[in-house]
Length: 389
Ligand code: PLP
Image (cartoon, rainbow, N blue to C red; front, side):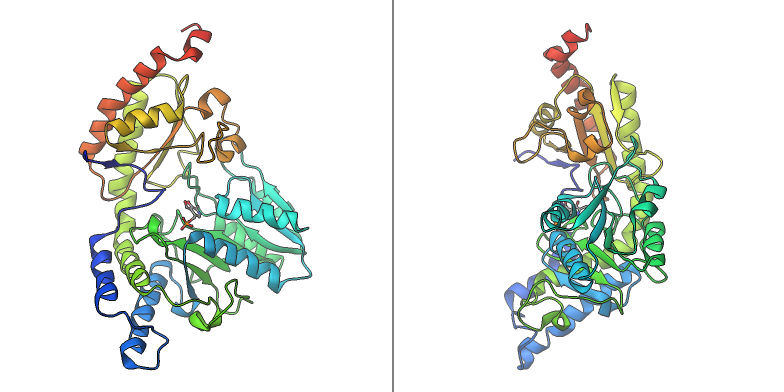
């Protein structure tokens, strides 16, 4: 296999070697069930508690407020489920048009069950209008769910301000912080946020583990029914190894956040500047002053994002496209559509998402190969001819 240059860290990340080390004993020798009466199993509970503390430390929470789940999607579904079950008299949800499907599709499903859902619009930069947000929150709203940072553009929402608006009206606030935690400083100590979702595999833990933060005192109804694990808040035998790896990755992330905002951001900025200098007719998608430090979403006029991705992939470069998706549809992403990115740009969008494991040499390699790829694709593009170029 050729060397992989991995610029798709918003999709998933490499498991940190330290996290892997932490996990191995649970596959080999320490396989007991933490709920068992015998010591061999029961002593594993302390490793679950250790991870719970490591995660709480990363987000300024109390360890009791952390509920382990199987992924970010389960955490999002649980938060929405719990808010609706514990407020049966309230029939409204407020969310945005640019949420990840884990929230967006779930809210659409609840809409089909008779809930009134407001999907808030964004402007061309991907930002929300806070007056719209405030207007949409009514006293009979059960939940406001607004993501912390967008997975495709990296645009950051002022979740603390929105949480405060919800709190003032006695409404629960949840944030999908899957792309934010590990990349931005998060401190829930004096926050108005009631629930927050995190996924392990976006911050160098393995796929298949996540957590939901539920502020102490928040009414909660479990989504997974069964045993009494997680203080009866999430049934199912704990995924010990993955929980231990997740805990370690969070401990590493405490030190890494600063590097995200210096080392990673500098590399992202170099990539962005280099592309703009070397390639004509490009457009950055999302507010460049209010973005995750690792994300660059950029469109190339006259070419299809998928063709760029395939040619990058031939060079071992992994990125992702915001247009055609796994469903095989050729529609641009709902996020770029909500931002009203013009059709000819939306189809040629690419997301590069970096991590602390990337290097400047890798950026130089992309800056060498990408202009050649775009030139080649534009030569055969029917859109260029139509435009008379
Ligand atoms: N929310 C956001 C913003 C995401 O980017 C993702 C994954 O891409 C998820 C939720 C879902 O997380 P998971 O893959 O752990 O279910």
